[in-house]
Length: 246
Ligand SMILES: [Zn+2]
Image (cartoon, rainbow, N blue to C red; front, top):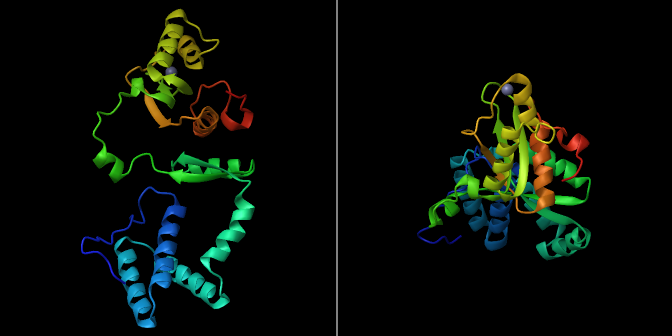
């Protein structure tokens, strides 16, 4: 199979922080391309040998390649084509809503499972990859100027945290937290309440932007997931179990 002289034949390493479906997809598509492009048995055998080396360099387990090859072979034997498959899949997937969500190990899988019960299919997307890093010519936006974020606040004296989300600039939201701290408004601001009770302070030097999600519904769900997983949360509603909306 012809490759351009500049082709690096590198693939995402198996131990990289990508969803497992991305890695399975890479192997599957490489094998499918080999079966589609190669017109002779010798050519196919050579290409599969190349794939074996490429995937070995990326630390992919051998069984992934073997599985993909067996599936592709069984497709050839049964005579099914990609076109036939797409038509069949298209009718069943027409009604599905598909959401792209930034991949966070552990959180994404849990969120995908819960969303599936609502008929929402999730696609893992990367927050940053090499391409976006290298081609970014703009100065990064300071975290306090970002909009549509899920953020985390911490107590300066203990492990207590608060997770929140906002569609406005984070700076605006933090201003409200600071105002509440100054006025001792613990009724609506749980971390302020915690600090009042324990005589602690909010650590304003440690404000985390956990993720950026533009759409409000998605953002609230992701916020709930973060709250759900936090053992030290002071949030009033404990995540998805008792989510009371946004
Ligand atoms: Zn504390």
